[in-house]
Image 1 (spheres, one colour):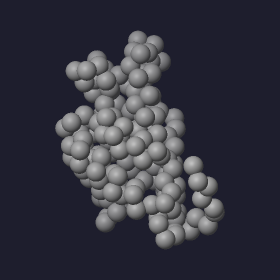
Image 2: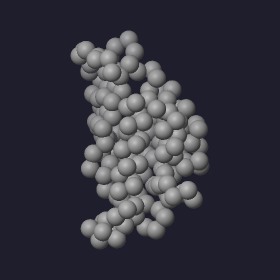
Image 3: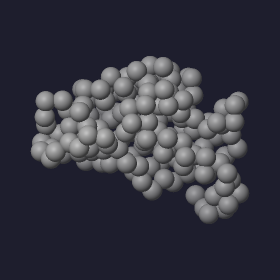
Image 4: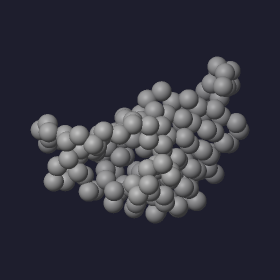
Length: 155
């Protein structure tokens, strides 16, 4: 990727960064309506891949993606995700993006999970002018299952 891709597609790059941020904010706020809106109807969301065994998850279709992610996150009393360092390439009405993710999860009843990984995304410009995820693949690079013993602060 070169700087010229950003310069020649500046509005698309800005919109895709906003898409990445909207996804993360929807996760953090548990806003499932917003979460569904960032996916194309015929999308795929794939977490983990074969390397994480039974922890892997895969959902197809915007409604199932939203329901699957919501069900997984609703088992936690804390789930905070941050996205970093997006690298985006725009080619017409399609784009790819890769972003680094850190996620901290404390399941109801205790325990903890800290995950570092990356999303690898295929993104499309939909007929309504919105960029949406066509395929979102999360690959874990590091996981720490140490208990999170800190105090939760009510929002």
